[in-house]
Structures are given as structure tokens and as C-alpha cells.
Length: 530
Ligand code: HEM
Image (cartoon, rainbow, N blue to C red; front, side, top):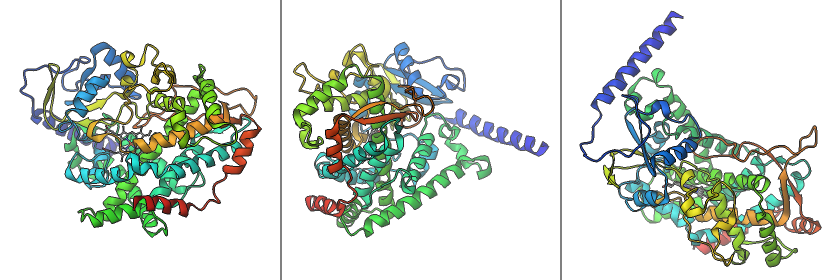
């Protein structure tokens, strides 16, 4: 017991000493401009005592109401700048991209970036730009158009799975939607489909994503504020083991998937990008390329699936007539003999408006992905110290009343359409980030979500699931969610009942797609790339 107390005392003393030295020797700004306003800090610890323990975006919204669109907080000496309007975030992250495109050093996440193995957390270096060029070559609007047939196929499979398994009392929707998104992206990258929501590859990706989401929380790990603590021996720095275990599991998974992608008989994005690396003579080890592909898997899976799961929450809790409006357009344009397809998109603007409203109402990443400024900057009379963690406060930006109206917490797709009901308004979407770091997967994500939303509304009445015991509707809380890099709705049950006999007929004909020869589809995509 005494040993334990001694160890703890020594630990606290060493950590305290290291922090003290760090604070005293930290470089100070000499600018005469003031810092942006924010909650009043205490000496040394700054605003640590006021920092939200979870769901930070809710506190940031309150702070933005109190202090304005640029808020400064001090986390043990680390400046954090929270941006809360579309104008401010564009001015800094997009227009001043040369300064504002690095990533903060969030130790657990950055450890991988330093090894060249975490693209999301890499600084905006030449090494990062090489990866970005490769990603954009397979995710731009033209390339992603080639994936539409496969995305449609998986959406049909989803309709089939829901028809078979999710009627009556309903099911927990998470696994079914995760399988759909995971299958699309694994098929394109590695050549295999995911046919079961308990598939071990899918479960491992979800677990790693959840862990990473925790690593990347701003202010959650003391080593982020004091990188110097990383020099402590392993037994005093438990985060090192955590990061190492995460890294090893990720490494094995990514290398194995990449191998499968390269050995596939058919065209895959793995093979395509390996060829590009070789043809262009890029200096990129193959494990780094495997990690680039893995970043696409992680990014695609969470944001896309969670947006779909929030859409189901909107159908259950927010219907002020949007479902009827969507159906009217769907049945006029598509009829009852087939499922909607991407070819219908120009004639279904209301579905496009619904997709934009999902991103606004429940942005998958409500605190955005943090940036960091590599130079001191001044803006609107304030100083933004070099090395500040910049948080694009996506939750609040998506609720700007001047842009979206006075009812920003409600789900109203109509706000995206001009009076003619056909033309989409030029309103900003915050969910995909900003400037040089804007999400390269946005075309891919929009396409998947559009197809699934159109087919779901065409096929099913979507309601809350029923209690097995009482048969009563189970409550679905529209704000209950996880906290991390992404905001996932807490598990809930929903039921999907076909709208009529025509749905059964169409899904019986087109729904079960596991007999389809996906090799032909992949090779057609390959031919388009060639
Ligand atoms: C609704 C779905 C999605 C959302 C909400 C989303 C959101 C984001 C955000 C906010 C960022 C960081 C932007 C910034 O730093 O300013 C990002 C980066 C990224 N996304 Fe997405 N994303 C989605 C889907 C996808 C998909 C489908 C893919 C790939 C197939 C993808 C690939 C990436 C990659 C590779 C990055 C790293 C880029 C960088 O660090 O600069 N994302 N995404």
C-alpha cells in the first residue's frame, strides 16, 4: 500500500515538475492585439475547469451566443480558438489555407501520423499532398460516378434486408446500415463484400474507429497539452501502450486487407493506386499506401452510416410533412414498378434537399476535425497565436439563423429549395470541413446517402420499434448520441414496413443481390478508369 502511495506521489511530482518547466519555458506572443473573447481563465490552468467534459458542441454554441463568432479558451497554456460562423471559418480555414491547414498534435492520434501512417492527422506537408492527390484521383466527382451501380446494388440489398428482418416490432438499425456502407467501400478498395453485420473485419473497423474517436478529443489527454510528458518512461505514460496496441491492430488489419485487394482477380482501388504510385515513381512505402486506403475505409464508414442512422431518427421524430412531400415526388417520377436510381436525381430535388438537411441537422462530426495554424495571425482585430487548436464549430455553423432561418433545430428540407421547389439554394454545408483539408469523400458520401434515402422513402413506412413485452412504441430520443470525432445516435429500434404489395414485388425481383457477379461491375469500373 505504502509502495503504491510512494509511486503515486513520485508520479504526481514528476508530472508536476515537467508541466511547470513546460509552462515557464513556453514561447509567448509579442503582439499588441488582444486575444478573442472567451470565458474568464484562472492563472496557470486557464479554462480547464470550464471545459466541457463531453458533447463540447453544446457548450461551444452557448459560448458563441455569449462571446461571438470567435472564442478563445486556454487549456493549460494551449490556445484553443472556436469558430462559429460560416463567414469566419471560410475567411480563416479556406482563404488563409496556407496558414491554417495543419493538424494539432493530439498525441494518441498523431503518433500514427508521425510514422506516416495516419493521413487524417498529418500536417499539410508534401507527404500529405501526395496522399491527397491519390485520394482525389479515386474520389472526385467523375470517378465516383463510376461507383454508382455498385452503390445502388448495395442499397437494393439493404432494402431486401430491411424487408426480411426489420418489419413488425423492428430492429436495432446500426448493424444493418453499417454493413451496407462497409460493403460498398470494402468492395471497391479490396474486392470483397461484407455480407453480415457481425463480420469480424467490420467489427474491428468499428472498434478501432471508436477508439480513435476518443484519441482525437481536444483536451481529453494531458499529453496533448504537454508533449514533453511523452519522454516519461512507459510505466508513467500509460497512453503509449494504448497507442501502440491501437496501432498494431490497425496495421495488421490494413496490411491484410491491402494484400487481399492486390491479390483480387478483379479491378480494385488497391491495385489502381499501387499502379499509380509505381508509374509516377512516388516515394511511398507500401504500408503507407495501405494506411491511406484504411483512412478512406474509416472516414467512409462512420460519417456515411451515422448520417443514414440520423435520417431514420428524423423520419421517426421530425416529420412535419416532409415524408409526404418526398413520396409525392417519388411516385410521380419513379412510379411503382421499380426502385429509384441515381438517374432520377435531376427530377427528385426534394430528395437532394433532404440529404443536405441531414448533414445540417445532425452533422456527423459536430466539432469538425481540428486544424492548427502554423503562423501567428490577426483577424478582425484579434490575435490568433501560432499553434492554436482551431475548432470549426460545425454544430453552431449549421444553425446560423441568418442563413438557415429561425427554426434551425427542426428538420425542414424545404429550407434548401428556392420558391420554385426545384432549384437548390446556394447555402453552405459545414459537415465536410474546409479549405485544403475539405473531405475528399464528399461526392462518394452524398451519392450513397441520396440513393439510400430515396429507396427507403419509396419502400417503407418508418416508425419507432415496438417493445417486445408491451407492444407499445419505444421512445426515440432525437438528441441522444455518443461523444467523439463523430456523433452517433444511441442505439434505438425502428420498424420498416413496406408501403404496399408493389414494394414486395419490386424488392423480390431486385433486392437479393448476392447472386450478382460483382466481378463484372468492378471490371467495368476499371475499364472506365483505364
Ligand atoms: C457523411 C460522410 C462524411 C463526412 C461527414 C465526412 C467529413 C469529413 C471531415 C469533416 C473531414 C476533415 C475536414 C477538415 O479537416 O476540414 C474529412 C476528411 C476526410 N474524409 Fe471525409 N467525411 C465523410 C465521408 C467520407 C468518405 C465516404 C470518404 C472516402 C471514401 C472520406 C474520406 C476522407 C479522408 C481521406 C479525409 C482526410 C482528409 C484530410 O485530412 O485532409 N470521407 N471528412
